[in-house]
Amino acid sequence: MNKTDYIIRQIAKSYKKKYENYVVTRIWHLLNNLDIKFVTQQHITRSTGRALTDMYFPQIQLHIEVDESQHHNSDGTQIEQDIVREADIINATGHEIIRISIFTKSLEHGCSLKSIEDINQQIDDVVILINFKLKTLDQTLRIWDIEAEYNPQTYIERGAISVDDNVAFRTIADACNCFGHSYAGYQKASAKHAVDENIMLWFPKLYENSEWENEISLDESEIHEKKRTNHQNYFNEFVKNPANHKKRITFARVKSNLGDVMYRFKGVYMFDKQASECVGKVIYKRESVKVDTCKPIATQSDAIS
Amino acid sequence: MNKTDYIIRQIAKSYKKKYENYVVTRIWHLLNNLDIKFVTQQHITRSTGRALTDMYFPQIQLHIEVDESQHHNSDGTQIEQDIVREADIINATGHEIIRISIFTKSLEHGCSLKSIEDINQQIDDVVILINFKLKTLDQTLRIWDIEAEYNPQTYIERGAISVDDNVAFRTIADACNCFGHSYAGYQKASAKHAVDENIMLWFPKLYENSEWENEISLDESEIHEKKRTNHQNYFNEFVKNPANHKKRITFARVKSNLGDVMYRFKGVYMFDKQASECVGKVIYKRESVKVDTCKPIATQSDAIS
Image (cartoon, rainbow over all chains, first blue to last red; front, top):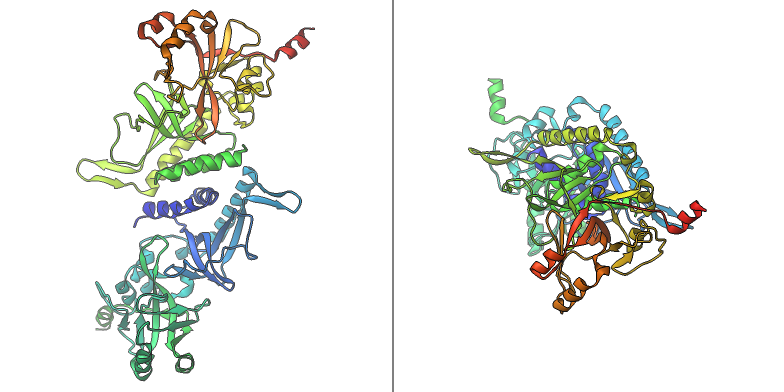
């Protein structure tokens, strides 16, 4: 995907709400900077639940909410209960949320549309804020490189992958190649770590599907796994087999908000025997939100020899 | 209607085509000037036929066309045959049309999406052009006053209404009040000129409807009128009655491109007996594209006394 296609498709998602497209396009065109990445209709998990924000700037972890209704939740976002199943959900801990309000509200006069000058002023203030935040960024984070973002090489060079960076790959092979492999293609839902035999790579569907009743907790610290059929058998075998008890570098299978399948890094999880036996489901607990990457092993031995 | 509502509704019409919304919003937000009026999806008549342009700036008579298909007419616009019936069509003689192309075209390599840098550069050039053209305008034309535009007083003060100014009123009464009346409401399709008894005011539907088979020629120099039933009777009576042969200050009933009924000034027309008898339809020919306005007659006599 090139930036033209990406940008146009992101903006097209803002057609859903009447004023959202105006706000999203004004922010984007006034920023006027192709180094800035943005996402529209971003699903996030927050302490209060899952929500959908209208525009998100991942480099500075800033969300924009366009307030165009008269009724809001106390925290100003629309809490979504149902449509999050396969959605690409990022964890918004520590993110900032700015709200653009389209209507004035007063107890006496009810709700009325704000002037275009007022709406523009709010947006212009956001643009100033975004530009200010970008200035404080590390040089490498300041540039949106749409190819590098999905390239394992980028993370091998960085030395680690972190949940805070919202890393997602287009294929399982790309994720594997951050941990010593040189796969051209790979289809299975788990793989070995090419260097450390105590670690495995895992690519689960963390939502209900034909085979599994999986879920991830709101704070993403726990994954629950349950098979739809013959669960008890599966559970007993799982508990017995030490190969399952390795650390799991976990990339959840998600639908990106443009509709493509992607594998998003969720952290390193580990089977929790006690918790699992207590509820009769396989429970994994997160041990780390960051994991070291490594070069392809062939290249490594070349370097050593 | 206020500007917030007008602008948002105009932009919302650009959701139809994939790249059009990007171009329209970028031009608008980079102009960043609430004194500039724009119209999206403007119907125009040109020498080559009727067309729909993507964005129109009436103050400087400039149209923007977003080229996002691989097939074009020789003049680059989409000629519309059917949906123009009630549409608000302006006459584009002398207007300028600028095209933004989204795809590169080469005989060897076919069609490919241009880079976002290339598309942005084309748009930025248009923004410079629009700002340049605005600077050369008369001070009174430089400011988009959404209320004054539809207010008869504006045209009384100017002393005339011209086709070139694309004047349209919200009600028949507002049109009448440019010619000496002080109507609060008026519903009929014709009215007297309050000062000059040789002139009448006319508000026809210039498209096929349940009662009439009317049409206006592409260059708007001729109006043809035919009744659906008992036309011959109507025609004979019409030709005999000299009251019908007055000059007609003509405001056509149209649907504005936001869907509201409006009355657009088309010029001063006059019955042409010879042409009418030749084809058996009532034919009016345009005598003038400009007409003098006058103050309400009560006010005039006040001023005289």
